[in-house]
Image 1 (cartoon, rainbow, N blue to C red):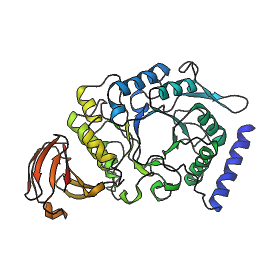
Image 2 (cartoon, one colour; image 1 turned 135 degrees about the horizontal axis):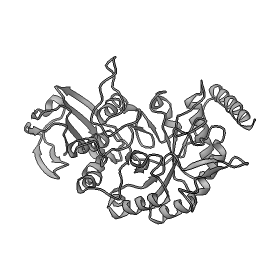
Image 3 (tube, rainbow, N blue to C red; image 1 turned 120 degrees about the horizontal axis):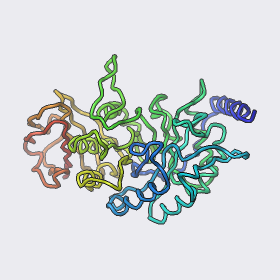
Length: 397
């Protein structure tokens, strides 16, 4: 009976929100650059998370140099919750988290990091655990009491006809009323075009379906890009650059750098593209066991500076010819980042004429992966680029 009342109340709220104009009650001055951190799902999924793992990952974020590079958030994804008590309070899995969420958040904060958690806008989470539908204000108060700094809200098991804008606005207002500034990450996979309405609701929104550690996925039968890979998710960002900026970011999903499935070159290209797209840099690998290559990619200060540039512009594709793509990202102080991507399966020769892309002479060029100067735009940029490689250049006056 209680569940029926909750669902009925939720439907009334949805109807009211559809009639009334939304009130901007998002916490401002958060996520002024794309959030950087780590999420448990890509590596540990449901069964692999527990209190010990999360603490060790936090330790590794500090020890590996990732914290110094700018990573801040440790986010527990699905499967930390098991039920609700008689008062409707969310119950933590006491086997996985015997000390409780507050103690874990306190530990993460003691490391100089921030803590994030997961919920869902439906009746259950994607893994079938208790979700927040009908409990938004109660859950928001609990998150604030625990010391949560970042909330990811998924879109599984929603009701027929449930409105995404209304549902996420309801959680936004609940978080605001709870009083603790929390970065709000909307995860409805781009299904309802959140870039067109979410700027006043959340700080970032998923603009694609889930990613996996795969270089490319075949297009849909109609030729449109398909989620599920580095290139598929990247292609779905095309044309969305006008919707991103400080405090409101398109999110092509978490990083797969360091997870089995991508080569080192593909991982570098993946990281390059996410930085060009001003995407949130949320690592999804096991930080406790990183190769030197993985660590070097995730902590590359030159590339991170492109992603975290204060101007907050999302890069965009300006050319796509024969598997060679060119992306441009305007930067603060008049600099420009240029990414050359070889998405094809063979090496390509470069003979790049800057004027063809509206870039004049007189700019010095820095190759950001090689961390060295590479001439000026007074002459053509020549060289080679291997299969599935990316070259990222910073042009400065």
